[in-house]
Image (cartoon, rainbow, N blue to C red; front, side, top):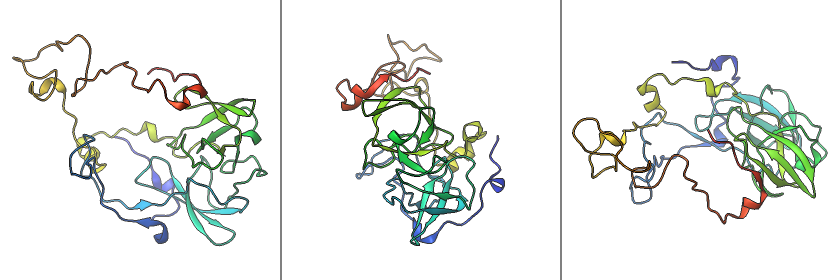
Length: 263
């Protein structure tokens, strides 16, 4: 079992009260109370932080006040106080400490944490919090340690290589933050025991072959049996392991130059 020594990385323990709220978690259930996503439930109580992904405060400099833990995401967040007095949370880039000034502007300097249109950034720049349109919110590359690389610019589009290995085009007027997302050691954490996983809100996963025939295509039989079906499938009989599930007619397919690499 391994963890991260947060004492060396975080500068504040309690969140900003005006930017947090409590809410009962859905834990994988819909409005009828039926389970729609399995393996969710329980876990420690957590407050939701209001994190800014819209970045509609353009040309107003802000100062990073703290580096904080957010139980609802893998990256660290920082409290930013803007020059007009407003406070907001943002996902922090790697190696940015309190006291740094950040700016969302087309003329901002190319420094980690600053936010600019993709067309203003040179090839080779690492970016995160990428929006898909000029007024859209940050939608891509938001998890701990991730980054995308700008490969080229052509005909009003920027070509980016995403963390999955996918290469795609995004309009030059879409915005992105410079740098790599903080908490880059997150993927090295070993949960180590079931109890720790339960506190994170993850319930046990049961093998299909351990179920009854009524519950899974692999269920039943005397003792341990082989899969017994022509191709692998999930609990509901849908194909798994290499079966393409992406909609063939998805509108964004024309922007994808090469698909992500298979794991």
